[in-house]
Amino acid sequence: MAAERLVVIGGDAAGMSAASQARRLKGSDALEIVAFERGHFTSYSACGIPYWVSGDVEARDDLIARTAEEHRERDIDLRMRTEVTELDVPGRRVKALDRESGETYWTGYDKLVIATGARPVRPALPGMDAPGVHGVQTLDDGQALLDSLDALGSDGGRRAVVVGAGYIGVEMAEAMLKRGFEVTVLNRGEQPMATLDPDMGRLVHEAMDGLGITTVNGAAVTKIRTGPDGRVNGVATDAGTYPADVVVLGIGVEPETALARGAGLPVGPHGGLLTDLAMRVVGHENIWAGGDCVEVLDLVAGRTRHIALGTHANKHGQVIGSNVGGGYGTFPGVVGTAVSKVCDLEIARTGLREKDARAVGLRYVTATIESTQRAGYYPGAQAMTVKMIAEHRTGRLLGVQIVGREGSAKRVDVAAVALTAGMTVEQMTALDLGYAPPFSPVWDPVLVAARKTVTAVRGASG
Image (cartoon, rainbow, N blue to C red; front, side):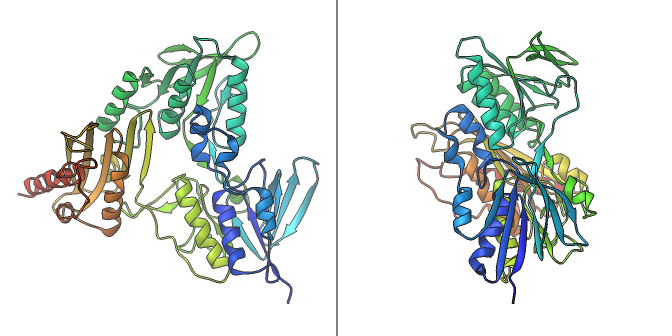
């Protein structure tokens, strides 16, 4: 019998994880695999780009987990610099454009994986395409930014403006600070890190100020200003203009689903493709999708949401590859866990914010505690703030946010497990967590927060 053909659109985490897992389960005599990637690189860590720009990661290639040549050695026909421009679902074929030669051609498939990722939000404002304005979604983007920085030279007084104060924004602010720039972050929201509640975001704002990063909240960008040479020289907002030698966009990303939508595939309220538990596109038996182009189920809120994270993308790929290759796998959903940092400040969250709980009709209580990440008497003990949200009456854990110094952020994993297990905050108080003075006070901050939240639940229910 002739081998089936699997076509993969997208050569990064989800796409190549799917291709690699399918190849482990089926040899080339049973499954031909053709993958298309429009960029110059494959299987790399986009999450590592800010640390490459900052110099913490020495070389671009350190971010590449597997090269195109290594994939080809595993009998995966990976075609780089080739973009799929059209998807013919009834005809089971894709149209590809070779960006180097300009050649276009059709390739048929028996099974299809869509892993087109996400694209940076780039508002349609005057000057947004000017030289010196950079997004940071791909390795190509990172290289373009570094080339731009090199062209500016190393003289003092260079100014960087970061537009947006989410994960990408604060990480790129740190990167620019480490490269010797005067950094201004323009944030449209009430506080930086809108994935936190404003009271926790304020702690991030205060820490960024302490690092020498100027954060301007409530600033809506209206225009990118340019000089006589056409290059960026400032960012105009409704509150004033800020000089800039380089502008970095950290506004966030959107699912890249134009190709899929053009073919009539179903998308959700956030613009991502809709899949079932096996990551199969709803209503299409032979098409799967994963990574930043899909929506996933929020296990706490009970709704779909769009989360662009490499952890999820790789899991999606493993599930897809198992199912395509004749095995079995499912992806049940997420609780919304994420960590980040700006210099030595660590930021973490999982589950729902207050406004998320209100949006899905949940009544809740909150508790916030201040502690240290080590025993207070142990050298290096520093402040750590934990906010916990629990359901009114039942005490079911709904969310946790943490802001603190070294050793703080990964404590959110305890809360992520508790959320996944559907634990109450009272059950959490009995968790047998590790203790030694270099790692924790005798009462871990997460347990202290759980105890205080139990009290809040009882008070609200009394």
